[in-house]
View 1 (cartoon, rainbow, N blue to C red):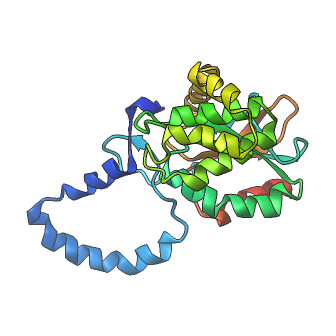
View 2: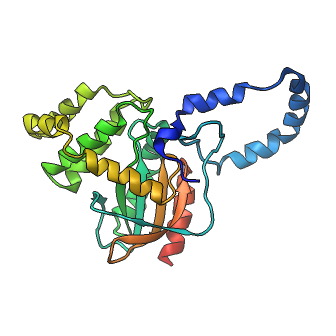
View 3: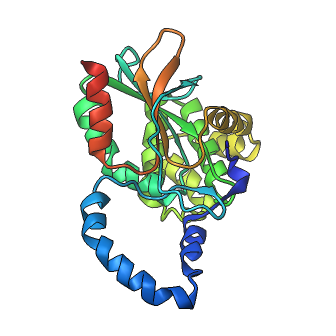
Length: 255
């Protein structure tokens, strides 16, 4: 079932779902839990962090078999536009697991694949409704891009992920024009773009396209061979998986 962002809950909400155990089951849980500690520790290295998702679920990310079609649309590209492999990322600037991927996965992708011309990354917005500032932050990055190019977009993108605490309102909206100024943008033009909602429809289209492709939480990734029409058949990865998982998927496509 495709879950629209308006039906999702935050990671803190998901954590409260774990605190509903029955007191009569506690002794059994302790005994059984002890039997699985070793196995859990061994397996945890390949598990992703949780994602934003449907209320009541305890999904920790999915990496299902099969391919899904998704378009790069007109969204910003990081890397060589003619790279043989495309990664489409649907993300939320206020999602803590998206920030984790920014810190733990993107540097390796950039160094080993993007900067070497093997992969291009396309960033598409999927702000979750319970992250109050995420939609405006997504619009702000588009406003920055409108004064420059894709490189300008990613400089703004990096600034947000670097500065926010990723908790829904981790970056005050008043800081957006400050970031714009630090990048040498026309602040008045930037603020007018943001206040008028110039790119609201653009962000909403990303949400719609992501939902249609089966995105159920953030971060969500599609990794596939590049195509002339901008539509890829990509392996779907939902969650903050370790870099090694991406490396494996990319290397398979580069064979």
